[in-house]
Length: 349
Image 1 (cartoon, helix red, strand yellow):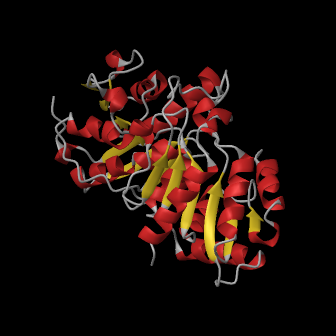
Image 2 (cartoon, helix red, strand yellow):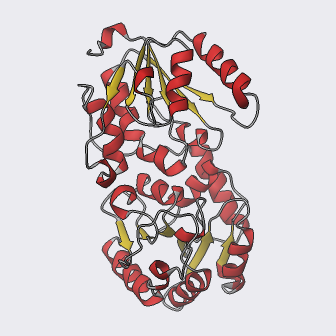
């Protein structure tokens, strides 16, 4: 059954739950906007991922799904579905694959419900999209776009959208000024953490050694990024860099982190949400992969270099390595430093 665009005036999009996945879904948001240019488009997102949709021209409203608060438990889900019902949405597009996403749209009595027939939710969808047999080898950008393409809707490229406001740029510059970055040095972002687990993390001592080697070659300052709980990781690296290390682990919100990444000449990172932010912002980067699948979640764009050493157990997709972390042990400082040199001169201003 086709979706007729002139019958659709209000659309609800159920966001992905991880920052990186949400960034990779932004080409799908743009395609939704272009397919339904007159529609009012709202997105339902968890609190930690919702900030990345700010300033996005393809979204009119951001609705918060507070699963740990007022939307917790069965009564919370019923409360949320009743809240959604009041918006009188005509179409729900489910980026997220979970059964719960389809159930909420069903309980909210949204008449058209489009998404992948995954997680046992086929009966709750009016427009079921069956995943191709090779979907586990598709890049996530193409996987999300496939929802629309297989529903007969047009897609409009793979470019990701992440827009930084002038106020955010000024706030980022104020942080840099406070830490003594006067604009004469090269700014290099270092992202040694990863929210999903330790298996995705290259070793902090190797990040520190890499920074020291770069430091010998140029006047550089290193901004160390990280979330709450990763403060000690940033401290370890910055203690070895002295005045040239800026430890911002646990000290920025998501939007400020995006604005600071935009200031960097180069970003060196594990597979993470901020890796995808750098790609969306067109910042040259080196991405170190181990336990995760570089085919499905690699950073988009031609300014990204992926460093990985194939091992029999990778990609395992486990949060923590149960053995000897060989996929990361095999990635040497020399490898990453050579990639740094190549990227630095290739992407010289």
